Image (cartoon, rainbow, N blue to C red; front, side, top):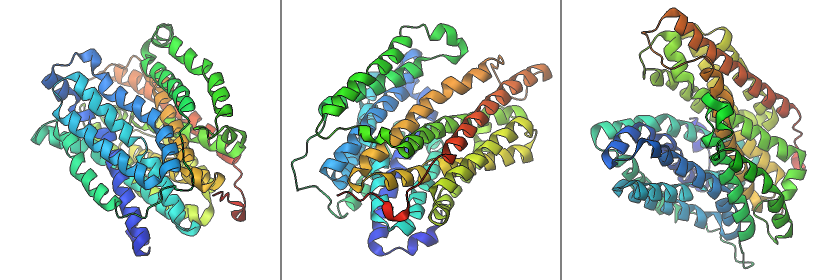
Length: 478
């Protein structure tokens, strides 16, 4: 990260930035730290294999549901108070999960973790975005993106270390001391609680919106791209997807009548906000295309299974370094230009996987292009755009909506992309395979990255239509 820029900040802003960056680190670290422990965890607790997916799914669902609710609570009751509550809940959930002796207790712990974690990153972006002067806002938000990328890189490696050296329980216990440090630092943050009125949450809207989110994400999660036609007919798929669509109408009715709706319908009347949300969903799908890089690299480089994870470090580092650079460019060029550059690089990266990748150099070129592209588009410019287009006192709610749409994208990504690999008949990878099988599997991955290129092209086109307001017209409704 560009730490030089951080030290040029005054002491107060530096403390705010470091405190919330630690929160982002904690939330992002947990996104990948569990994966290496799943096999050991299910054996230790005697969990049936069919229930294993719920260790991840319960976190994904509660996390997505909590984001808009926690974001709204932060706007109503003060971001410091809700942020510290979220960190505390995350720590409590980690303790429950770490001491769990059964699947039910583990799932309760994961749910509490997600409930606390759902607001960490949106609130961090809201506070950092509103605390910094406009000429330094991009740089500050870029640090958030960089920290997110670094924690994402470390997550699986830290998880694997604790499983190998200690116990899977330490992947949860490690969160507690980090959370305590954040709480101690957070208590020293400026107080921003609202005292001018008695706030109340739109419980009706929160309930219907949660129902829509759970139905949509659960339906998408249950889709099996290997057997798509059969899967879509399952009672665990099409009814849930149908419910998520049907309940949009009552959600609109409830929010129209709400005094202070949890979901601002006016956002969806603003073309630029709608474009930013759609672009956020596109970035979610694009990020999913990158999770196939390890297995793709194993086929290209004829590596043994599992070794592709080390190759992925090139892409992750490129993304982590690109995020703060993108923030600096954002301050100089503007958010739209960074979005367009990011999607252009991501498009070139995916096309290089399709047409150029045949060894270390060409594969690395694709990963660097893709990593920089994702680093530029993943969050910083979109958060900046939303902060520009919405009032400051709604920053928590509006940024939570950006994160929610990105979560929908990450759930939709496997449905769109994994099917191309499945159609190739890919069942294994590594160095011991015939040339014909390798070519068939490779063809599936190339078709998948061609589809990803189309996704990035759509994002690029959407970005062209963004129209940022003049600098003097920023909405500062108090």
